[in-house]
Image 1 (cartoon, rainbow, N blue to C red):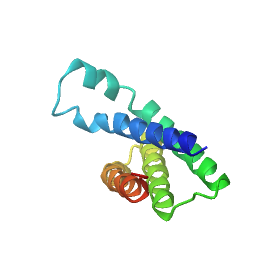
Image 2: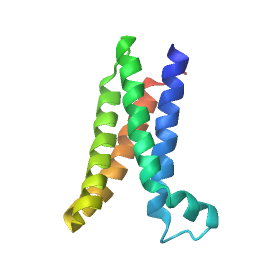
Image 3: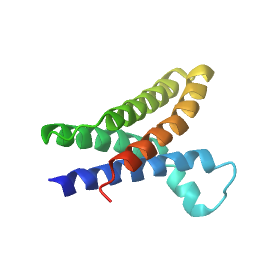
Length: 118
């Protein structure tokens, strides 16, 4: 079951990084990056869903970690801010979403570093 938890965690992190390519659009004009960035919302939702499943499976196996809870909170916050911005078109929500993304990335890295089995 530990392998399944690991795979879910890797998928959540990969989806999060793919969603983050949206922030690279002004700097990188490579067609592949632009194509991935067009799917920003889809990858963000996939990251949130996969992270939530990752947490449920870890919790059911008694492997819940505080760093994972914080990373999940970051992903959910980033996603909610993004969805609210999409609905309300508020500049404050956009700024909050853009700040929450890098903070969440750091939380994910901390979770990976402190909980790796190597």
